[in-house]
Image (cartoon, rainbow, N blue to C red):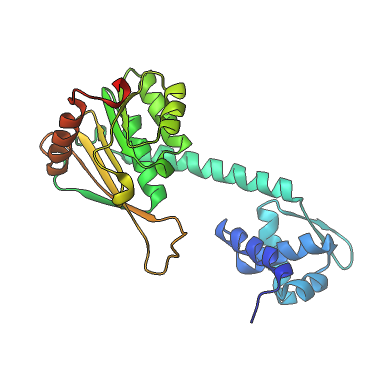
Length: 268
């Protein structure tokens, strides 16, 4: 059975409200009040399919979140706050929870992360790989070598590279088009461009990165089994850290050879 397009916003709103911690009945009640403007328990039950006896529990829950007001009439009338105020309420709640989480994690995290790690670690999904890339660049002190395809050279990665350059880290960037190189050099004038190690269009490689010669990451782009050819390819990566880590040793040798080449791209 096809979904009624007019119902999709309602279902989406209920789903997101549940993810913010509301019970199903509370989420349905709130959405019903948004649709109604104001309403009694009978009105809400009719629109939301929440049992009338449970509407009052849902209203009490919503009041705890500051999402509804009650008119002491007979029968009682309920009113939902505006969408803008609702968003602001959840943003404040999220900010507070994130602040608590950050403080707790800071207390739990070791004073210093071990620099030497055995083996390699796997990261799945493009967003997770990007997060790891930005984290590693953010810890760079001396040098960042970064090769990538254009689709993965996003603004947040460029911003991280700019931050590293401002800390006086040397930035080597390869594997991008002349147009992208021009944009990067506008943002990071001291970035040094070099030729790619291979033709990116003929390989599923996504990114190669080395930070301070002690941390490396390599990713590949792959299509899922059910993905259409036009869908963005998924990304998976492995990374390692430490002077003697096997992945670090191999990629450091490759990058060192490339960067010591007498014919760098920006001098051609």
